[in-house]
Length: 109
Length: 114
Image (tube, rainbow over the protein chains, first blue to last red):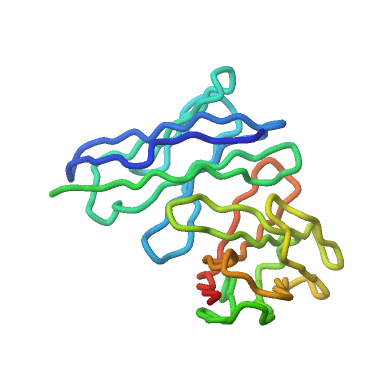
């Protein structure tokens, strides 16, 4: 079957760096996306990796290793507004997104 | 440019009732999707469409039907609602058909079936 595994919850301190890991198993794989969702809100796109390596977008970076079926989202200089759930989602051979269950990021002052 | 909009935002149904959720997008996207999200879970794909007049089943299609008569609209129907369909429903759209497939989401419809 198809599945993505990510930690259910991560806690970090304001100003620190946090990494959210994701491992995937899908039938066909085009790339790994990351979405952010605040409580009561809709998911919003953060990043996408199709090739191995690191993609940087401001305070957020995302990494992919296709050989290890693994990726991570790195958030730097954490701010209280980064408190949200973060989802990894893998694009399968039908161009459909298969979603992980999400990681709730708790930021303490 | 409103992006993706959903109607209604909230709804309470009794078991056995029917309803239609409407999704509209003004970005001229080819692909549209209906997801459901249950507490503490990721999104699960119900149905999707790769263009006007086309629909396809996703991961959890049972109990739902869809139609895409116009490119900008994607309707999700529940013919006979069940308590198990209590969920938050999100519509999304994308340009689709490529490995880069950012999806744009509507604000969601919170449905409770009693």
